[in-house]
Image (cartoon, one colour):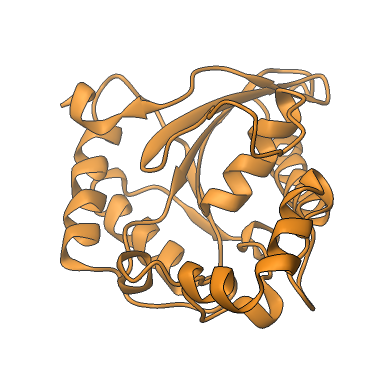
Amino acid sequence: MDSSEETYLGLLRHGQTVWNLEKRIQGRMDSPLTDDGINRCRKWARHLASPAWSWDRIITSPLPRARNTAKFINENLTIPIAVDDGLREQDWGLWEGLTIGEVKKNFPNQLEQQVSLGWSFCPPQGESRLEVSERVTGALAAHVKKHPGEQLLIITHQGVIKSLIYRIENRQFLPEEKELIKSNRLQTITWNSGVFSAATYNIALTEQQ
């Protein structure tokens, strides 16, 4: 196919996990999907297999919560799955495994300083948002160049999805900015002539059933 042909990408966060319920930072660590998380994955599977969509392949983060989400969704799609380490969640360093409340209590000054840095936000011994953006953009660019014109379903993490869309929208990743994307929604973008562009954001499962 012509490498300039438009490629369509759907970005979906993994299903709810035990640590999500506990408001615990997962980063590159992991916890199991909850029953509600699995049920929602299967609802997405039924919706994404409807005639409204025509997915060619799934590309997933290597973390178990994402790979299991992809597995449940593919029960209906039955399309090829590729695992890409470039789609893993942001490395939260020393804060991984802590709850958000624990970070606010034990590292208030450090957290406030990091939040004010926008794209340079970087947990101690972790990875900056800018590094995430560069890593993820490179990983997806390789896939769209390999599969131009296809519809790619990307199963990944909220931090990854934000890094892609905030870059497209020229966001600064600062707390005073209005919320742009919501959790547990399907976000869509396109790739054409070497550029990622916005398509449709915040497609809600409940509105599509």
